[in-house]
Image 1 (cartoon, rainbow, N blue to C red):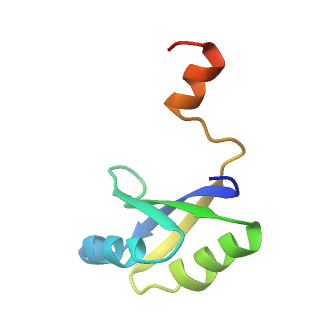
Image 2: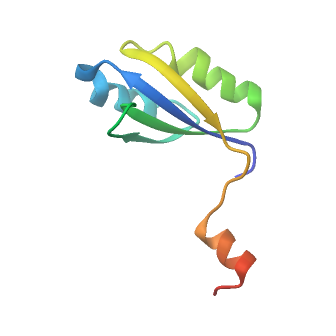
Length: 92
């Protein structure tokens, strides 16, 4: 998929991590949510057609969920997949 890809790192209320993950994955544009160890509690993978759509998903939907303390968004410049790398390097 072309467009804008982002990873949203989420610091959440500890008792609400699982509930938030379920709510996040139901938001259009969020394709996966990972519960992780470390400084962040959740990582959401977001795909949007354009920056305005991405901004709406994160600002209007994600950041307003009860139990989210903070977020940091990493916007991808390029997306690499195993299939793409195999074609580029002719590893088939």
